[in-house]
Length: 110
Image (cartoon, rainbow, N blue to C red):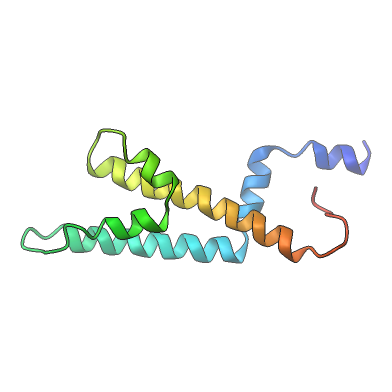
């Protein structure tokens, strides 16, 4: 098996994992997790005025989270929308960071 065959045999999950391990993607995921925990903590108390706190993590993970928010289901769908939106956006951030930092040389991971 040649080196080009070995690189072509990598699965999409391998590429997704490589994109999500990028430091910029990890920082974005950490920020989104912190925003989600904050929104839940502010919204849970009954006497709280944080009813609109869920908008912040939704906007941070848009556009995917906004599309998924149209599904019925309440708080569970809100959390799922934020998590999936963060994963999709972090993958795109990781891919862009990898593409921008590899320089003019050939991509050794392709």
